[in-house]
Image (cartoon, rainbow, N blue to C red):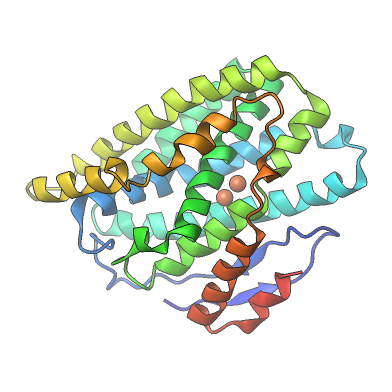
Length: 288
Ligand SMILES: [Fe+2]
Ligand SMILES: [Fe+2]
């Protein structure tokens, strides 16, 4: 993988998109996560939801952009839009590589596109923004869990680690932007929390569905040992998802705010690691 990076300030906030131009090598294996069937397919299916999912986030925030008068938030929104646009593009490159390897990622991306188009017609702008806030809470929780416990990504092909690490740092960085827009423009507790409940069911249900969409296209045998290990990785005593419980529930508190968890030190450490991995010290310029 070759990566070009460029950090150019595009707004007056601390949220600056870090441009990447990942080139994913064809020699990256289909089972790129420790040679593990389950984890590789699961995270590939998650990656398939990012390009269109993040475009939905941007649309839902843009709808309210003209009404935002807080000058700090206006700048942060620009940073949020820039970061999400880049994430979608880079995950598309990765998904294209997996398509070449035989995983029908394009089919999943199209499914997500159509599903979100449908939601865009059915849901009010307030509900669409609440859905974005809910999914941003999920991405921030996942990102910060990875940043805090890098051992969860042990064995991942090192050519793909920067993609996930970069995305995790920026998700944590902009975790409060959609929420602040929501509080500024909508500020309805019931809509926010009921949408989180509905989105949780959708997120888990569709993630399982997308896993099977990809898995069904592979002709190799089901690796039951990998599935058992994956379940332990997700839901075992120190499992990835188990760790998210308290953070997930905190979203239902009336006074919840994403920045109640100060993750700056975690992000800075992640960014230093990324700069070293890519040999791009200029990435650290974004640490303010
Ligand atoms: Fe993102
Ligand atoms: Fe995000």
